[in-house]
Image (cartoon, rainbow, N blue to C red; front, side, top):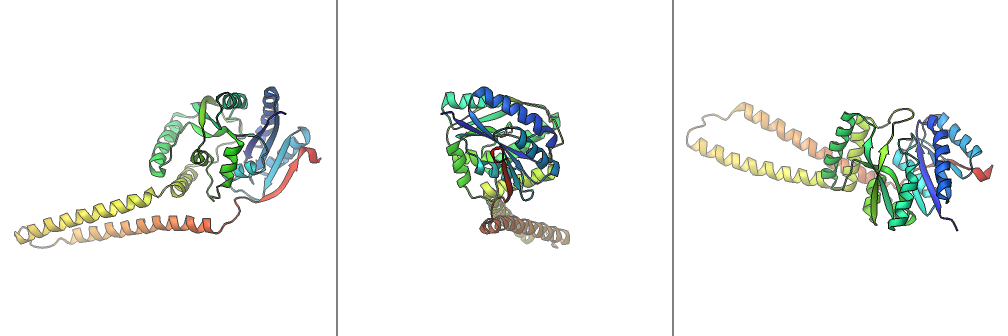
Amino acid sequence: MKKVISIVVPVYKCHESIALLTEKLTEVLKSIEVSYEIIYVYDGGEQQDWFEIKRMVEIYPNIVGIELSRNFGQHKAITAGLFYSKGEWVVVMDCDLQDNPQDIKRLYEKAIAEKVDIVFASRKFRNDTFFKRMFSKWFYKVLEYLSETKQDHTIGNFGIYSRRVIQEVLNMKDNIRILPLMVRWVGFKSLSIDVVHDLRTCGKTSYSLRKLIHLAMDIILSFSDKLLRIVVKTGLLISFASIIFTIFTLIRYFKGEIMQVGYASIIISIWFFCGLIIAILGMVGLYVGKTFEQSKNRPIFVVRSIIRNDEK
């Protein structure tokens, strides 16, 4: 009996590439000689995205279209695709053809040959601007330090995962979903292969600087309490420094070196500590807010409709 591979593709404002992507995926998967399904998850972008997915379902066999009720975000859309996938192996990739469908065969063959559960696609060769590559590299270094999770700026969602890896990821009920981190957290043997990150065929990235910072904060708050520990250490350090400064000031006062306490230094101290207290309260508030959000136990995604080729 042939093994089944599921391809999960979140779709957001990228309808121009869906037809070409489907054609290339079908060609590659047929060459591997496995049973397969291609799952497109419409994440509430342009209506044309969903129209194109429905058109692909009508033309090609083994296509599944999942329509979410609204825009939930890339990683929650991926989670929806994983939930409805049936394959023994699952490939996650973007819809803009920056992830080359031809690499799926290499990922699958590597996983089978090396008997591992995860094979990541490492984007050693990226068709991005120098600024974007450098920003990405340092962004992930800072993120690795603050989140206390291993980060590799060359690895994204693109990769192949065994069914037991996917099942463990689905068992995680975290409201904040970051697939690469969740996959690393569950463990299992993994490898990576080098791939070329191709040019985008349509649209532009939906990850603005503001969204990247928001994503980074989600990762830090979800996977680490390091910010709180940094705040505690900072508080202790300031307290220690203030004690030393107080002793030093008293010594100078009794020596007659200080005749009058400076007004400016008092005001500066008040502003500094007020700012520090507000920052600490805000940071604690972020953690409390994320905990409150998780305690609501809301569904990670809501599906409006599912269409399959065999339901025509």
